[in-house]
Amino acid sequence: MEIKLYNTLTRKKEEFKPIEKKKVGLYTCGPTVYDYDHLGHAWNYYASDILRRVLAYSGYDVLHVMNITDVGHLASDADTGEDKMEKSAREKGKTAWEIAEFFTKIFLENRKKMNFLEPKIICKATDHIAEMITLVQTLIDKGFAYKTSDGIYFDTSKFPDYGKLSGNTLEKLKEGARVEINPEKKNPTDFALWKFSPEGEKRQMEWEAFGKMGFPGWHIECSAMSMKYLGEHFDLHTGGEDNIFPHHECEIAQSIAATGKKFVNYWLHTIFLQVDGKKMSKSLKNFYTLADIEKKGFTPLDLRYLFLQTHYRQKLNFTWKGLEAAHNAFSKLKGIVSEYEKPKIGCAKYEQKFLNAINDDFNIPKALGIMWDLIGDKTFSGSAKAITLYKFDKVLGLGLDKIKKEKIPKEIYTIANERDDARKNKDWKKSDDLRKKIQDAGFEIEDTKDGQKIHRKF
Image 1 (tube, rainbow, N blue to C red):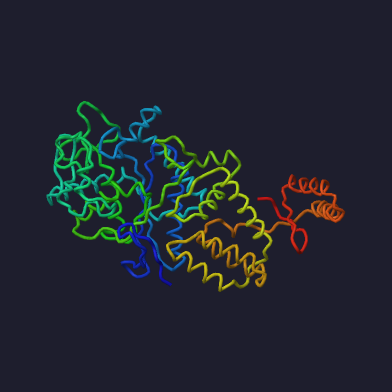
Image 2 (image 1 turned 135 degrees about the horizontal axis):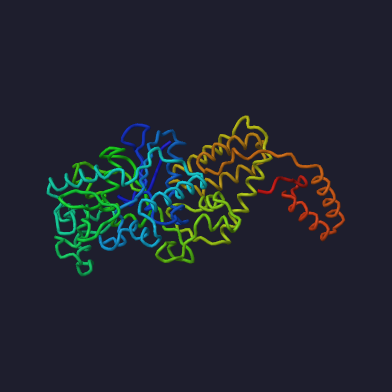
């Protein structure tokens, strides 16, 4: 069964063909760990998680690598401003190393809460400075980089394909560039590979290279680390749509210039998570974290269920009402699954439909609909549905196999019988009061054609 995916590089849906049969090299652009990660980040990493799960579900052995940027990400994409790590350290009264350790730990904990599969390799920028210096030196030796008073820059005029990923062209980029802040740059579009520490300033994170103390540029980090673990040419690279330009554009230029080989075959980018119709971001101060939703009584898996309802290339507008609806649907799903008996044999026709959906550019919303169609299909037993749902969950990642059937206490059945009598007598107030009593005890009661059904409240 072929997998089709949308490739940002070609702007079309393509059949996925790995470089090596049944093996996939996957690189995910990780976080800059200067602050708490928010739901927009969770949405982006959810998409990468789905990609990896679909590949594994389809029989591929995935070598998944993700970086942690703990140095070199400047506040401006124009290679100006303060390093985000240094700035956060100064504002919070910590060292940059302490900031990195603290927020990396929270980020990884949040990944577990969202039930994201862990990358096989998680690599920190500060652990790969030697590789970055070597890569920059290679670009200097090949004539693609030059030195100024404040750093080493990549000469974009030497790489005609610069702008191909984003759809820009060098001429358009030059025409649209603002007044150049650094007059030593040969072209407005040139970007920093390595920055020198400002004169008279002692940075917390700096290394000696190219005759001065300095630190890596943000873009060089991902090229150095991805090629170290996945090779100079690999299959898949993911990130948010804000990474397309300039970050991934610069990665492509410097990597191909250094190796003379194609860098990545397929680029997948997630559309921004919206809130109130705007991009959720720290700069706009309109973001929520996992801690925020937990404070309101929701779980990270409620959020994951919300994400499952929208395609990764479509806009998802986060609202509390939407999260509540996702919580209710997920609770209903867990209640249904808890009633299923031990699995025996699955539902092949639904499994094929599900596979078709996920392999079509990871159409998870359609796959979710197929799951609910299966649940409502009266021709299959609960045990058959259960084993198929557990297979589906290898992609959905909702932890359905951890839901256990629970024995309902006798007193709850007694209240339920009283409620049934009240309904027969059309005593709706008593019926509602008894329903609430059951709910307060931690259970849900559902009225069906086959009578009342009770399950643990999730």
